[in-house]
Image (cartoon, rainbow, N blue to C red; front, side, top):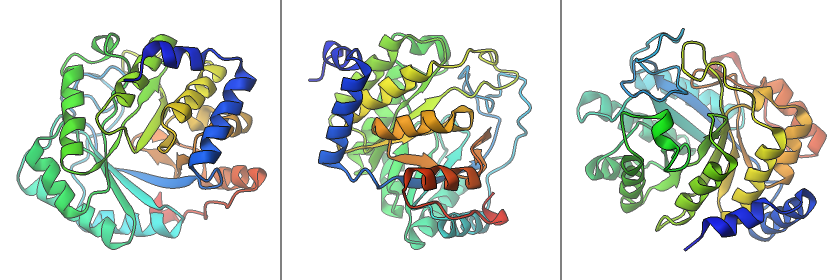
Length: 317
């Protein structure tokens, strides 16, 4: 069992030592030059019944996000083909649901997964809570991974979400694992939590029967109309420390530098890669939030001497 004290002692190391250890773990377990490019598409936007205080898609808040019904399979095919042409190897799809209902819309999502897999890409979805049977059907459709973030620690979670419990989140992760689908689960920084809360979240994930295949580290994207619209920016060094700790805690997993990159300097992003991050989302949007321009990402990878993401055609925006 991993312990909070163990993670705390790692996190609190002098930064040069922490970065050095994380880099060693990264090189021993993964190819540091292999930074996965993922594309993320909102296939059903807005109107979610959950009250997550950070989310502009919640029906509880008066945000500028417009409701958009579930996309068609053909619409998703066009987006996935464009993302692949731009260099994505994983195509992620998000729907603003509390939990999908069995029926025509869930069947359509299964067809979307089949389309993405037919393009020889990894397929990931985030649909809210799942039953065992839904997880099994997604597995049968070829789903690679399921994203369901813990967001924060168990103790802080009730401060940001009241329409579901922390154990609801964990049960969905267990259902996904039981079905044989890889788990993608991480958290959000900047919601008012402490550094200890972030580490407690990593401990929860590390003690799952099957550790996550990928751990996304998101920085809050404050959204107008939500309770966290005026939340302060996360300290840059705290981001780097958490990524380095996550790399050491999950040596074989992808550590995904996710939401908030558009607010990061090029130098901060490079520090995050040096600390062990090895995946990004590219394209102009992350669901409803802005993301760095693809040309900026190409310049960033060029500066690091890594293979560049390809330019994104208008159809994949």
